Length: 248
Image (cartoon, rainbow, N blue to C red):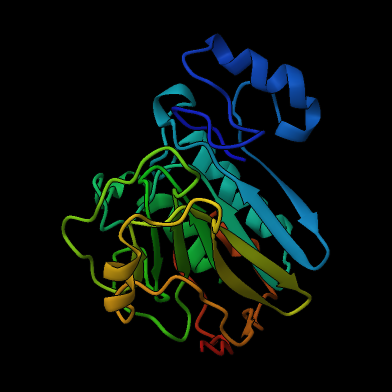
């Protein structure tokens, strides 16, 4: 899990905790360098990147910040075909907290590198976005698909302003997102907690088009262009070659 303002899983530090000491003491080197709380690792053919959305604690998240420079250098050093990044607070959300431009620089770096998936939480709901650019424009060919998954079991917030490119939303059902990472693509499924069903199941069923619960799509391929990414460490613009991306 990534660092955030409250715990959402076994790797989530409970704040305030000076320097997130308990988090780093427990996970050690698996949580990256002790102070920043951002790190990356490989899982099969995938390159996974954990970022710290508590920007004030790590010198910011904007372009030129230590974390953003690290992210660009990490992407340049790991030319994996499939890239997934995760942090706590969403760049895009139709939920209570809404869109947050604080993380636009993260998106620019990831979008330029052809990243495939961003996972976030914070809003207590489930929302899936179509592939899009850092500024929220639809980009089915080269965009990043973002999932907001805050349905771990405490409360639901409900939705406010429905954002562009939001495809599926649910604020009534507890559950988890299951991602299957394949060598050249991924599948996903939102799995409801059947032991704790929604009290408004009938209402949810009546609005299934807008709030589908059981998603199990065909496989989605990762980007096929990954060569020559050393430019990422020094220049924010993407190369001109096109990405072969099958979005279903």
